[in-house]
Length: 512
Image 1 (tube, rainbow, N blue to C red):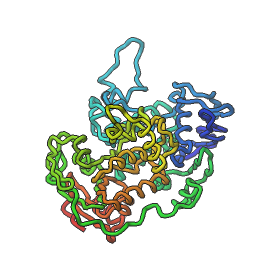
Image 2 (cartoon, rainbow, N blue to C red):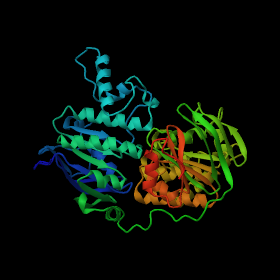
Image 3 (cartoon, rainbow, N blue to C red):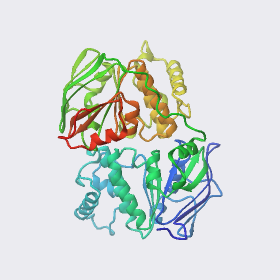
Image 4 (cartoon, rainbow, N blue to C red):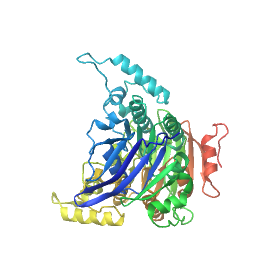
């Protein structure tokens, strides 16, 4: 359902930072009812466009914007986007963890009359009704930091949709909305997005998951190095042609070849691990093995790695690392690192990196002790090693003094991987390691995982990326209701078989 007049029309939008142009003469129309895909590698200019539409930054001279046929002066003021009917779900979600759901929900939408007090009961009821409609089973009084990653994403999306309801037409801009959503949680989002479009709103959908672009959008714009290199109907692309358009060259195999069977030598064991709704769970991991943990949304696999790493105070049971036993009750992350473990959390913003610290400070966070001599920090040695790691992991730009938060998502992830690899762990726990990264960075990360396994590291990956797990793992454990319900070996394993095991009822699931 599209109209003749574009809902939004952008012309000749460029943006330059300190002499470096990151977006060149970008033009785009979005029609009412259209779901427009916007894709490109990290650093291609997508975030610059979104920040311009959100009023966070102004474009270079010469850009123009019209909304519903009316010319809108640029740069946008902070209050303009909401008045124009623009609603955003940013990659960092824009939530305050220590505040309640209702307070976050109403950060930019609080309605009061003069000096009258806020009608909190009414607002809580309204928020509760909106959350219930989209399946977020939390009270408006809960704090955001008590929500799961998935429910935080859904809260940000519901909040954006609530703002749109005040307008007859508008634009919903989703920047990597599925980055923290397991595969089975994405259907909920797609249903909502299609409802928004069918009501005559436009949607700009930014994602690195190309299958989502092909499934959801009607048209795709491709950015490469700040330039619009393709703008075509989605049906004109298949996955390979879309990848080639994004990269500018043909991609060879995304997944590295397996080096052969992993060692039968057990280097990691978990015994009777449990916490709240998870467990008891017991399994082993061999030297050089890549072990996958997966299942449907909320089935417990998402929590296991944090329990093993001592990041869940309620966890009980025991683990064994290289023959040394550790009781999970009382184990903390510092002790886990000392035992030879590393954990890459899924949520870069909250749990993995320190956004306001420099890239170098993040890189050496787990190995800082080795740079002290006689009570003094050897800054030159630290800087030299940081620069070498940036080159080895192809981090762009390779600037160790730059704040981590200023890097694209894929480059942040490469910094955090490098940080943990520098500590030479025996056991590397990874939760959604390619979450929110582009296809090029994804290939590099898969290569790092395989290289780590070949060097003897045991890698345990918790992920809902079923296709990735099938190609990268030697073995996969499927979880159902907090318990291991099936174990699948790589030989003959397909994505369809894995999905089948994830969806089977407990009594039907078993070893395969």
